[in-house]
Length: 529
Image (cartoon, rainbow, N blue to C red; front, side, top):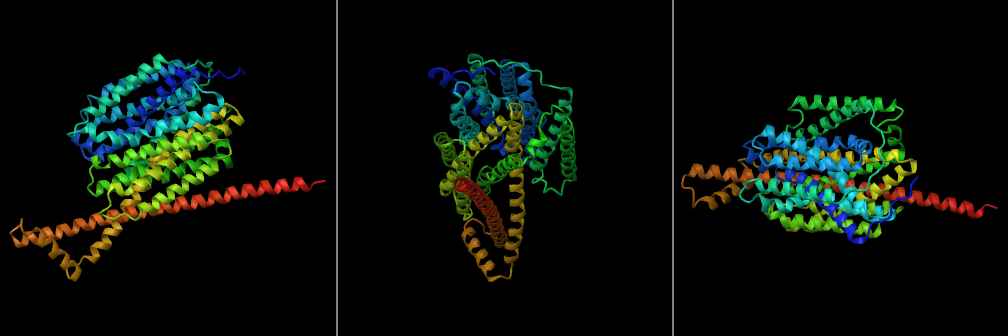
């Protein structure tokens, strides 16, 4: 086995690492521009927000499925060709997005954008790891690459209000195109070291990939559109989810009976990998509190996106600090303690958020959301390091299986978490609104006094008594609806706190058990004659 190449000189290394940051932000901003601006896309295209939600589903489907084949394509056809074709495709799709004019073309372009951005995540990792030593790849490269990739969606919420301006999306598309063209130039100016080609693609790979891609697509569409249609109101969602489960089961059957499978299923269902996969999935679920909870709660309270810029700026800064903390403290063996600190921070932040009221504004959630943003970056790099080390111990061929697990848990886990979080919010909002509506009876003295107070405030502008009373009742109903939304989000935040706290307790027990086992083994060694 040839020795690893030496690290590059500092100026050249900084150039490669800067390219990785640009590639990571290009991918993250592209995804964030869609998820953060669904209402704006709907208005610009003249469609409903429900129809616009298909844009997010179309983007996420290839992001989850394509890494399965891209790694094999890169291995067989070469790193250089993979990088150049991938970035050219990304520029072409970014160029096409400027002329999107209707829902059909927008969905097609978003699907192609998701497919074209899939290589960017891989390229961001490669460019960050390329100039570093073997030790630096783990301690510096992984946290830096993860920070560049994970801060993009939140950074999109920071810059979107200024770019949208009067409501148009042209500048969003132009910024995406500009970043894509800069990325194109960097990829051609800074070539990656060539790696030996290997013929790894087999005909049966395409059958497995088709089944897995359909399964991931079904899950993505189901968890994006399910909460919007209240699940049971659209029977096709159930059939699609059942088909996705069947497709994934078929892929597992094929892979279990192959000599050279894409995924080593037996290794993936080993206790250690199940534990890691479960931890990654659980973490993505509880992080939905930040990506789905706070932005949508403030939107329900009538807070404009421009009023949330400071909050998301601080979240981005906290995430960067989390990445720097990993660079300073991360090393093999410390993953459980970093994960425990992350879970404690998430639990504390969620508990603080669960005290929200209709008068809560973004500046009041800065500390709690910063804690959650810091925790996000404190969790992911150590988890990826642990998985890569486990895969390398078994052989290079296992890296593919782990990378797919990692990317899938982040892509599918993010969509699944957002879908479950939104479903919980919708269910709790309906329950709270019904409870509040039952309390607001016309014969209630409290309700009558509240209506009278609203009518007194509106009397100067409405002369007709009947219209005045109707407007007073409408105001009461609107306030009840707002209150029900806040109560629903508080329920979700508190559930996040409970899940994170229970996970922290379980992790602490696991760490203490391992420590006692090691101590007991050492004691037996000491007393052995």
